[in-house]
Length: 245
Image (cartoon, rainbow, N blue to C red; front, side, top):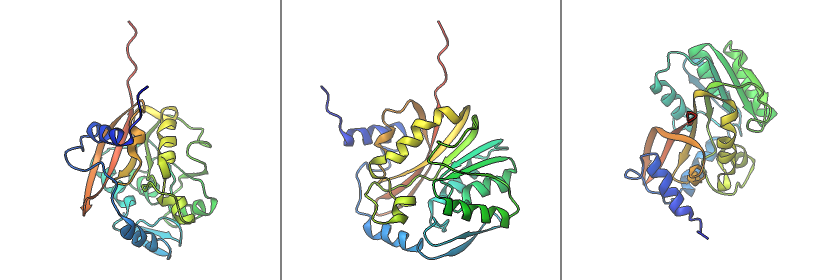
């Protein structure tokens, strides 16, 4: 019986994404940077994104200039879509990404979060900017009844470690990649046949979870931050049905 190797799985995933010659599959000691990033989330702040005013209370993930929220926005823009008819965001937080898409493309946007408090923040930001996305309380796709989304986005919690507080549990940490795997396993039911689903990984994500998922993956954007730390936006698409013989 073959023994599953996490290290080998991580290397296979990087090769599949075309990143194996650019980055290492090793976990890094990022404790100092992680704590500094978490500290920013513990004070309320206001941001301007695409002309919108976005408030982020303490404990709700902030779209700071260094954040993965803005990394997703940059890469959605870089994809150059003329339209995004139906967009779904999982784990919307303060709503920055979903509201950016609603503001820029003015089409159908659904956004979810597991926290009613966080949804209230997204709702207030939507009203402040004259936008009307559909906001749902949902654990991943549990309450999502619509189907065939052209774009699905989840700014996934990146760090494979046990959370030490509610902030880390809600938005920063995903021990073992369980949340990431739940997202990947749920995509086929809601993603349009030619749709694109985005999520994030970094050097300290349990991205080995991608190794045996029946989706096609590709790297959308890569950022080399320094001292070996890297993060990427990854795209997933449904595999085309094989024609019957």
